[in-house]
Length: 344
Ligand SMILES: [Zn+2]
Image 1: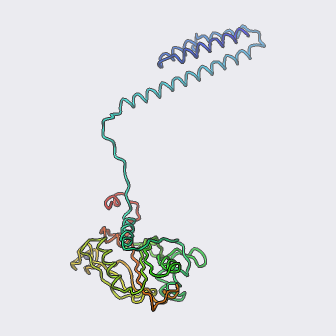
Image 2: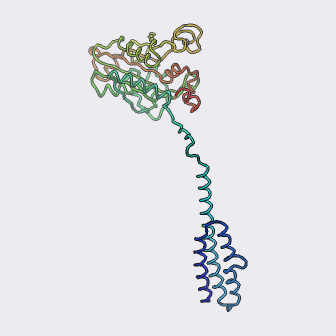
Image 3: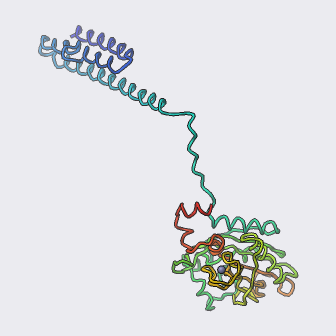
């Protein structure tokens, strides 16, 4: 038995040295045959076990099996090594380092984000601050403080998603106007961009989640002319230098007087002929505006006989429809790369 153990140790050492020295798969195969093959050295030792006394045989058999397992494992690892080196060298041979690289696919800003950024940049240049706030707001900031008491029918047009008692997903970003005015004395000049929610059925012109850009300017001596000037220049910034703005009388609880704001149809340039975008009117609607209602000013502690101001709110997706001549508002949220690439 001592002899067998020594022989096995000796065989294993020689095998290890030879396996490490092997330079290809063929050398490994000859090694396998020489040691583990039918007439291999280990196999010969295994045959010799039969000549041992019966009580030594099980232990001797186990010792041989252990050495065989170690040798097989080493052969397997060396073979793997050759395989991966072969793959690497084949790969290296197949790569043409002088070939032009495949350009990385770069993304771009979403068209809605671009309109928000450009609008905010325009107002910032005129001294406005950009404010953003929570999408979940209370009834008070969404309605009551904006002169829409709980029994007012116009609440219905701002129907949104209720979260819990008194909290809802904001149907407009106007809450930020109230919060800003509560914190700061006039003059106040802000623009508030952000996501809004309304319980609208989704179709080519409506989404239940959309973006708004709102503006507010309150100071002494502010009048409608300032509003018209700012919005005309904003539209020229977004659509082109010949753009005009028109105001149509309207009603909102938080402004008095109130107006719907239209701008020249960018498709027909106001030609008033047949036009799929404006229906032949030559104008497209952007949103609402007006002079801040005295009740709203009083609610935040401003004196309406001293201060006046205007506010407006535009739907960003609506601006996008006009600017990019898109026929369906749902395209903006469809994650369609082909569509977005055209507008990039
Ligand atoms: Zn048109």
